[in-house]
Image 1 (cartoon, rainbow, N blue to C red):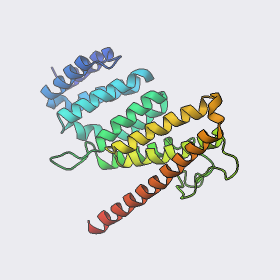
Image 2 (image 1 turned 135 degrees about the horizontal axis):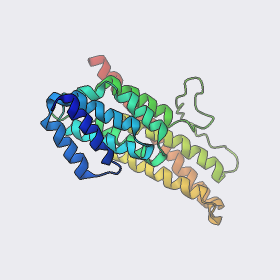
Image 3 (image 1 turned 90 degrees about the vertical axis):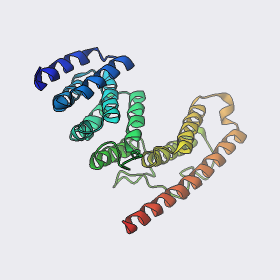
Length: 254
């Protein structure tokens, strides 16, 4: 069987990847491992599957790509890197929010350095394009305090909460701004478990403020929430500044 014929059969068999099936992903990973001469055609088949699959099913082809890349490596990682950013960003734009979060979680694993080589899974330039895209995408619902000229967060030591009466609506604005800030840190440091915990905390707090429950408007609850958000903001600003300083030191020594 020629590489082209194998690639065609591979693409046809990917029609069964309509859900997150470990056996299907493992079997297709094995085929890729046993046929390195057809790597280019296999990669093309997976890319076509991502393009042609309906939005709810695109993620599973990414899981297959991830499995092949992590279990086999070269030449697949090199071949996938060619169109990685284009495929990822196009897919992200078409899927729903839960799937987007799964794509983000997958992307974070790609940034982790290989313990042997110290390098990321895919080409750094492709990962950088995806990272910049995600930072913008997750900040689309930014509050007025965002920098509209650069479309980037403008983290400030000052809270965006009004100095007057505290309201659930005002707290939600602050929560959204802090969520964008924390998410940006997660993209920079994907293995930061405390940042993930903080992100989840902010989501839960937002749900409470949006619930419309009678006790949400109680002054004591609003004041306690405000104090918690102020503490989070101060800590995030400190971590952001520390990260920037660390990156500057790395750049100066490299």
